Length: 377
Ligand code: SDX
Image 1 (cartoon, rainbow, N blue to C red):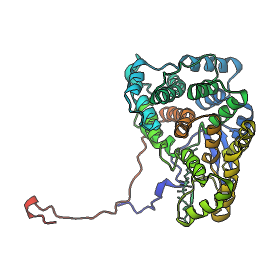
Image 2 (image 1 turned 180 degrees about the vertical axis):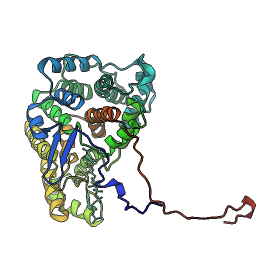
Image 3 (image 1 turned 60 degrees about the horizontal axis):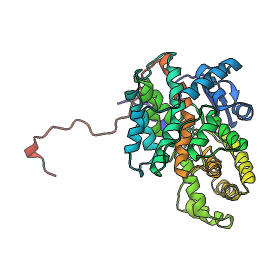
């Protein structure tokens, strides 16, 4: 048996080298390929950040235009996948529908699921372009409505909002979605990205790696937290109830979704930016209830537990105000994080090492095998 110390949850274990993302947990900074997320959220677009994460540098204008054009051209779902989505019961959790559709994609495309190598960026683009169409198609069918065709004239954020809400959105709403997509695009070796890299490290294909990641992101301790934050806000209902509800939950040792983080020891810089957008969109829509409730919840949780908000605290309030149903919030997270997942998979392919840690064996030893007839109880 190994006598090395066990790091439960691989906490603080440095598993590999990567150029893609740096998290300064103590300083509360998030860096994509050398660029601070605050600059990117302020000045960039999701398409530009996707280029940065896949190619490792910001694009020139022609390069960005070429990438945007390719993404717009890849939004249509194969008919076979549309039929699978049509067969799914309307009660299917949207993350299960997304996972199922991504698993099936390769079977309905002439080209094989993307294997290793720089060509993988084409496969990464295709998944990034298709995830909004998959979620929209499932969502509209479960409500008995005909699917909406993607609109090639719209940017990624604008097309995504149109597909999920069925309406044209204002420039401010589209910018809010674009910023949310930028902020969720990558986050170093979070659980779902690590799952994708473990899958890729066996030389399995890109679609299988993203399927692993989707199943991992679904968990409420990871991507599923944003949906549960909205459930909490709806449970609280009014600002004057916030303190009592939260202190009650904490007294019962319940976790308050949207707070705490394995790496950040101060406020998650993404939460800071999303708080500002939650307020701005609330003011634009004349509905600051969610923002006001969240400010109260933040105050109580920090006072009682010293915990800071993470990326999941404010994202749902923005999505709800943009007209997106709660159970599509985690699929939204996936629509953005698919860029980070695929960037990490391609990095793994480029410098491959099978990921295989050890376990500390604590089971029984030296037992004697007894024939079936001689065993009792
Ligand atoms: C994401 O890894 C990533 O980067 C993920 C992510 C990304 O972009 O990919 O940032 C996205 O997943 C954000 C996190 C979303 N999840 C939640 O909001 C769920 C609620 N948060 C927690 O479950 C928790 O904070 C984790 C899972 C996020 C981190 O947990 P850790 O590092 O394993 O910390 P822990 O469970 O050991 O908790 C340490 C202490 C405990 O107190 P004690 O039992 O020691 O007294 O802090 C407490 C915990 O009880 N605590 C909480 C809490 N989070 C930690 N108490 C109440 N509510 C919380 N949310």
